[in-house]
Amino acid sequence: MLEVQNLTVAYSDTPVFTDVAVNFNAGKITGIIGPNGAGKSTLIKAMLGLIKTQTGTVTFNGHTLKQFQKQIAYVEQRKDLDLTFPINVFDVVLTGTYGRLGLFRQPSKADRKRCLEALKQVDLAEFADRQIGQLSGGQLQRVFVARAILQKADLIILDEPFVGIDLQSETAIMAILHGWRDAGKTIIVVHHDLNKVSRYFDDLVILNHGIVDYGPVADVYTPTNIERTFSADLSAVLFAQGGAQA
Amino acid sequence: MNSVTTFVTALGRYDFLQSALITAIMVGIMSGMIGSFIILRGMSMMGDAISHAVLPGVAVAYMLGINVMIGASIFGILAAGLIGLVASRSKIKTDTSIGVVFSAFYALGFILISLAESSTNLHHILFGNILAVSDTDMMTTTVVLGLVILFVVFFYKELLITSFDPTFAQTYGFRVQILHYALMLVLTLVTVSALQTVGIILVVAMLITPAATAFLWTDRLAVMLGLAATLGAISSVVGLYFSYTFNWASGPAIVLVAAGLFGISFVVSPKQALLPTLFKGKARLRRATA
Image (cartoon, rainbow over all chains, first blue to last red; front, side, top):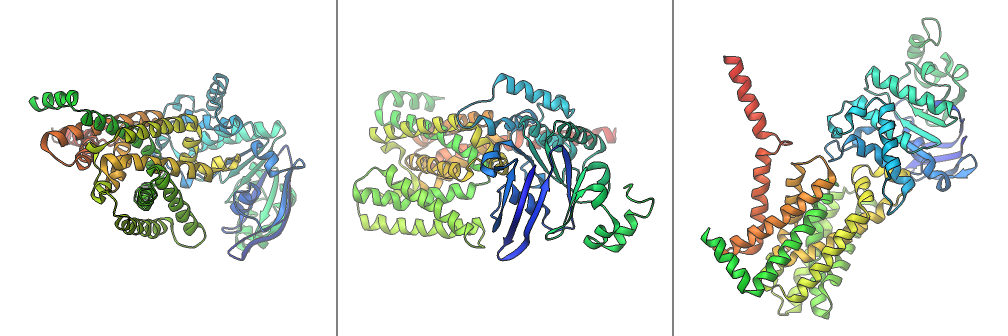
């Protein structure tokens, strides 16, 4: 379980959120939703120690960030990536071993074998030699999920993994997420649109400059919460035909 | 062909030409390798800045009679640190910060050099004087080349991931900043070595141009490094030949050869595909009109 206690983040004195407290359960896929600018990515980055926090503690199964850093896989939003970089799909996935290897050690034969297996799991084995700029958005996303497989992490955090990807990629990624869930890992997914919320996630965190609500999807994904966080119109549309089937 | 024979004969006869050639080749190799990382990290401006910012270090080293490498390294790292400090502690963007810091260092360098009034010829520092390479210079360059190769081999993984995906490296706890400053230190050493062959003003060309040319030919980082080093060495050899044969300044001659190789690659390389695209376009036109 990932526990966050009174976490506060501010950019130049304007707080993004104050005293956030939330738990993420092992063996569950937890979605984080909220309007644009609600602080979803900021919360993730703060939990990962990528940005400065004003107050708060983050622990994973009782360990501090420094202690569990090597057990995290973070699949970022890919918008800033240099797609012209001279690297192929295989080598990108292989970088998933770097954290464990540390300085001066090179990936072993076994690592390379696992790398190819991870590529097979996401249906990209035949793309191993492709330069990464030659992939579609969905394929690229699968490459980074394959890298997360190689990291053998217990905590996996994905930032908007389903944005602009094809159905095949979405299915492949969901299959991997389910596999991780069954293995008892903690999975956190930042999600921007409200479709398929109940289909993707077991637990849900609604964020809007602070926690609106969190818990099992059935309890949290309610017309009242959506109306409170987003708008009455959106809530009406989403819950119009037969409740939370979306 | 006759001039080539003359050049080769002269190489056999004159020690200074041999030293020049060997030093130029070593500088070509090291700047190609480090330059590859500089361009992949989008730091061409930084490469230019550091190469200019070492000038006061060179002057101080002459004044105090210490090794140029030490003086230059101190000022190179100081400049890199100041650039990082200004960019991170204010709302000023990195390229602006680079502009402010490096021009100040460069200006300071000019004044210090004139104060030193040593036998150091400013002209040689600015434009290089490969034919005046001493045995000590050659030894220092050899040591720097060794350091560059060790640095790239031992930290290949880390250089790759921090160039390609620095956030990822951060998430597993790697100290990205430390490697950045290590790279800046190595860049400074390469810069000072390249001072002898092409001079401060053209160092950036040796860093950027062979690496950019290599980038046009390959999708593998390791291949790019090897190719950039080879192209750097070839530019040095051919440039020195032109310099000797036509009595051109050696630095500009080397840089022009490197630029020529880039120009050719820009037209014919598969990645750039300027020619292939043109041909395809013509073929399509022919098919359409047939």
